Length: 512
Image (cartoon, rainbow, N blue to C red; front, side):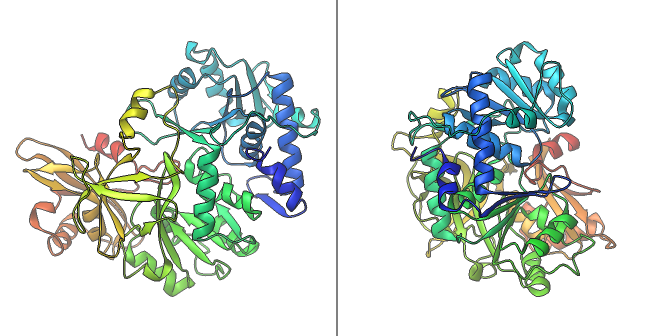
């Protein structure tokens, strides 16, 4: 198989190279490419023979990060089945809704979710799940042990010649905040072109990457993890993001590449070992998901000598779409950079016509790393891609004369106050310039007079004090009056998704 069996190929080229360090295990696991490929073959053979999994069948997994996610993904790739990773933060009823839409034949889960799985399996929406496998010691009635099943299966090469570039490899669910998440169809073609874009941009054969994103998210599975494995590098997995552990692992394993979202970078500076950790092995850090505050860039540069690259990606495209070089981190602060090599990008008006430099419009994209639409949702697929093949992101953006792009805000995050368009990202950028602000998010809430007004939700740095009026005065000194939120709410923490992003819809519900 020339495509799909990524480990089969990589284990030929570098069988003894360290592929995975699973630091979430006790003791941790260290697997070479040949060992990782053997696990994938054993699982693929079990899936095919014991569970009847074949081409196009969905295999769901509900587990925190660990090598089992990769075992499942690569086994599915060998068979032409579809890896379907579920968000473990969801309620079992939400999972039942997703199961009804995607109809997986098998559910793999870790034992900590045993109770939720029991409830899920009793729901009519999960009727298609015929087999279960548990990671750990315990499972629901009739469930098979993941490790025992692997050990009891043979490791002969598994392959399906029907797998082609357009075969769907995975379903990744969008981070929607209302309704059922849509499942973006990730093809092997999409994976290949994203890997090429990533390699052209920044990866080396000998890189060591520490992944802190959940593997049910495109950031965890596809930003660097899959390109790293295709290229033959080493990837470190953690069960979940723990700042002190991350700092220690970067130092011990001499990681060369690290990626996170701004909230995670903020939390790392509060880790107990921030002052002592040696991060000099890092070639660069990548930030995405939201603009990285300049004071944070300056802190990492001054105290740890870190070079920052910033980028932009999404579930349905790439996910590597834009990149901002490290040398532009300060001079072009707030920009997502320029499109990656094989990505075309435009900013258009409501009539789908390109707008000139420095004008705000919707960001649209075209290129071979685009997803294959949404699973079982042709209407949403048609709505997202226009007649000329451009994918409509729903992001408001602009670009300058040098073709550096900036995300102004999400269309859905923008609100209108007194007839004026208000972009929360602009206000948040100003808030981060205040020395007391650790994290912040601005949301629009209903108002009888103005239609909507802004509310700034702020978490202060430990040991630093600042009141709402002081922060409002700071904003008045930096923004036009109509952009200043109506009030500031000081909070102990902000709701954060599994991918490390601030959940603005949850804040709106709290403030309603």
